[in-house]
Amino acid sequence: MSLDRKSQIVKDALLACRHYFLIAAGFSLAINLLYLASPLYMLQIYDRVVTSGSQTTLVMLTIALLAAFLALAGLDLMRATILTRASVRLDRLLSARIVAASVETSQSGSSQSQPVRDFDTFRQVITGMGINALFDLPWSPIYIAIIFLLHPWLGFFALGSSLLLVAMAVINEYLVRAPLKQANDLATANYNFTEMSLRNSEVIRAMGMIDGLIRRWGRDRSLALRRQTQASDRAALMSGAIKFLRLTMQSLILGLGAYLVIERQTTAGSMFAASILLGRGLQPVEQIVGLWRNLVLARAALGRVHRLIDGGAQSERSFNLPKPTGKISVEQVSYAIPSQQKVLLRDVTFRLEAGEALGIVGPSGAGKSTLARHLAGVMQPSRGTVRLDGADLSHWGRDALGDHIGYLPQDIELFSDTVAANIGRFKTNVDQEVIEAARLAGVHDMIIRLPQGYETQIGEGGAVLSGGYRQRIALARAVFGTPNLIVLDEPSSNLDADGDRALSECAIELKRRGSTVIIVSHRPSTLANVDKILLLRDGAVEAFGMRNEIVARLNQRATSIAVATQ
Image 1 (cartoon, rainbow, N blue to C red):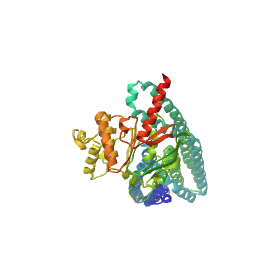
Image 2 (image 1 turned 180 degrees about the horizontal axis):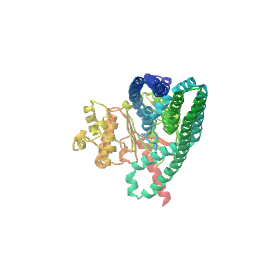
Image 3 (image 1 turned 45 degrees about the vertical axis):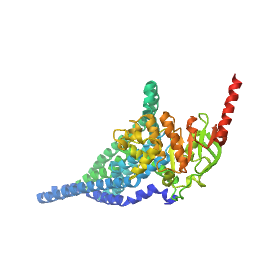
Image 4 (image 1 turned 120 degrees about the vertical axis):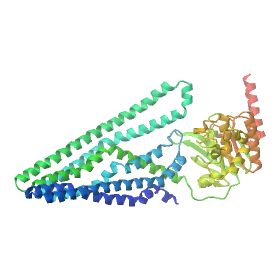
């Protein structure tokens, strides 16, 4: 699928559901025609039954009215069912893409579940009262036209009433739009802060940060509530005004009809029928204004989903290159945070042959983890290129590239599932490969001692495991399938002596199998088996070369500093 095609994913999904909406629109026409049964019944009662005194006519008209109401209820039920099916169909077409795009474009500090919530907000509107009002609104002119048939003066009154309510709806949009958008943006930011706080609940409890955090949370919450209250107050004012106008106009048309009856220009049945028709014609406008907040939120949510999927689609590639050997080339790579213009990497350049092992060292804040993310293809450089076997990482198909890369991030993230599912990257029928990866990471014996072995549920984020267990299982996941390129960011931060030894043996075996291994670490023991070392400082390469050469240079510098400080 081309990029131009992918940018139309949301539109294509909506078009795929268009037959549901067209059928619902057809039902809406039938429903609105059946609503004419009540004014017609009223018209016939006053103009025929009352004047003729025919009980038979009354019974037949009543039976016809009940049949029309029964059909109306059935059609309304069918319309709701069809729209529900449209919502389900839309979910099947888009939900998986939304999750995938969320993973592709996710950034730290943002709510990972917000796109799914946005999509559900839009889907709920499809099955709610708002969509029914939108479907009914185009048929309001039918009622106005029928009122014109009863009497021109009644028709012009109904037309003027309709235009007045539409103008009120436009004013409502103008008054509510800005504060509602601000309230929604502030609420989203507050939700993100809440999720971040919950993820760090242990730190908050341990250091007594609850009171301060609640004050910080409450300040943002109060600002969001003020904007929301402002929008709600304006919407309530306009909704009340519109309801007042609708009821007033529905009553005044009775007065106008009574005047025309007195002047013998129309009948009493026409007077009452016009009132009912006007009420029905104005009802969708009133409903839309009452539900305007939900409709605006749904529209904004759909816009965010559209932009998200566009961004995710632009990061995907459909062309898969041949299996790489693991040769890495980093060419003038620089990276700056767009929102802050803070440069984290500056013209980083180096090369690794297939099967070589590299250790990346440097002080805190030097950009080591940022470089590791670039090497794993998680981040795209602001300038420059990271190449795997000569091909830009961004030119690889994401799924195919993932099969050739193993990545252990500094912040370990395990999923709420079994040990085997986490190691096997949720692939099926890979039991032997999972066991092989666990053996390679030196964690097999630890796993089989768990209550259910490889089928042990590890909880959210691996909550039932110790830090060392989580890190070694994440290492097994990184080496699953023996990828050609393996990037390990601080892989020994939670390991004991046995874990360090297992990590060292794992690195040696990976090199023997021909994998290119890149390790970010502060521990000299972790880098004992690397071939080369890259020293980063302030995002730039200060030194790059063979391990013994760089270690000797660093030791000489440390000795000189020690002598100078004596």
